[in-house]
Image 1 (cartoon, rainbow, N blue to C red):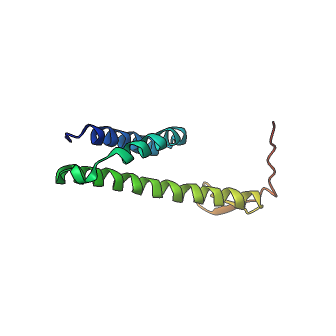
Image 2 (cartoon, rainbow, N blue to C red; image 1 turned 120 degrees about the vertical axis):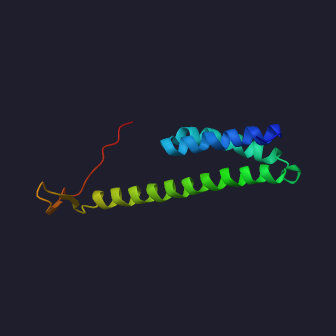
Image 3 (cartoon, rainbow, N blue to C red; image 1 turned 180 degrees about the vertical axis):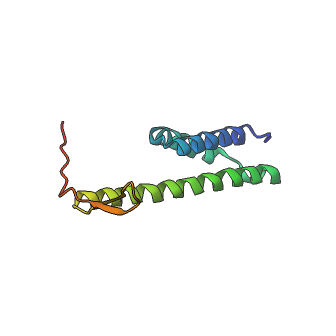
Length: 113
């Protein structure tokens, strides 16, 4: 367990970020960002020992991998929605395992104020 109180708070924020990423809680991620930036600016990296640096490295790498996965997933979902809106068929499988295309025509989205 780190002795540095700022590092402890920063690691706790990284853990909260990890949990928010796993839940897909984008609102929480938006709230954690400024707090993380503020604490990162106060962190004395050169004053940390090897085990503290290893804990920080592990937590940041883990979250970076989750962030990259989330980014990839969001991009794929955005692309798929765009293709469906453009009229691309949706593919599914029948009860017998045969692939079927479902054409929906061009989709429109109603927006209300």
